[in-house]
Length: 263
Image (cartoon, rainbow, N blue to C red; front, top):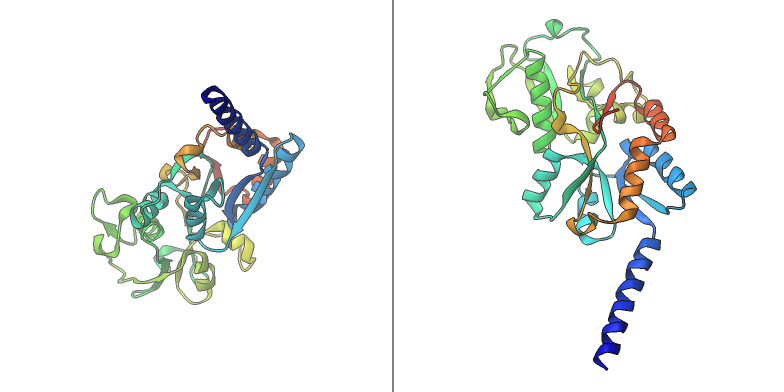
């Protein structure tokens, strides 16, 4: 009886694994990354891999859903954002593979150079702890403020040591920054969301942060237990190496992105 029970347990585990392998891989994302992922989903289907794309409208739900096991992987965040989310909510999530890095820029509807910015100019930056740090780093790169040495992406307004133009910082939800373009003198902008909004030219930034901050490469993030999922490995390989997906990336982001895995 013991041997039979062991055999049944083994068969049950094998059946469960087979069923899991046959189930669609559920990938969570946000609008900024959806179009190239849709191309990857289509290519995966041609290769016999079923993938379901789940699109979220905010930057909180994708990690909540992943931690709950409702999706298998998400793709919308870089490592600093992930680490902040883990510290805040206690998620047991890890980066699995790199995606792309999107340039973030400083945009102005009113001025064509930083020198033209008046004293007391209003500057809209992201309001979450990580992306606001990225905005402050951009302002420092532009020579508009000085930050304490070594603060990096963890920079806050308290780390500003010099602000010669007396800039007034306005903190706005990152996905809503595009709407601040008409009101603020200078805006931290995300080209992907600017393209979606179709309100102004995503390539018109006075300054981009480029690849000088590799920590901002967007990551495919999973629960640790999923690291050996063959569906995941296959899908990432398609995303990173399919010419069809690369064409979708180029069409979606133009020149305002770089790959985080090399060429």
